[in-house]
Image (cartoon, rainbow, N blue to C red):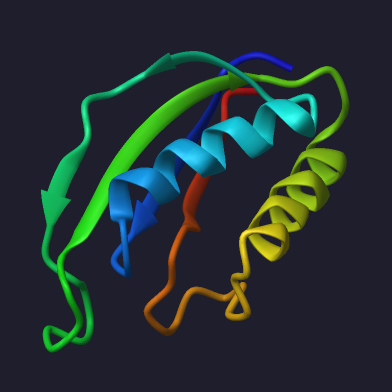
Length: 102
């Protein structure tokens, strides 16, 4: 599948290292980065008391279907220690949004 855009974010610990680790783990799950945006510093949305995020959008290539992609992305989050897959609490690295051009 082409035309997949993923927004990554981290607002805990070494935020830049978390983004790099997420991209590296995606490769282990057959999710290949095609290109990546610069990293941006953004305020937390919804709970302004949380630390600022580092965010990055990446375009990826994946050889299987959308459900498989979501499962692999959730596996990456779990491997990285993310317990709040819904993204409602601070986390080391979370999938903030996913967009598929179909």
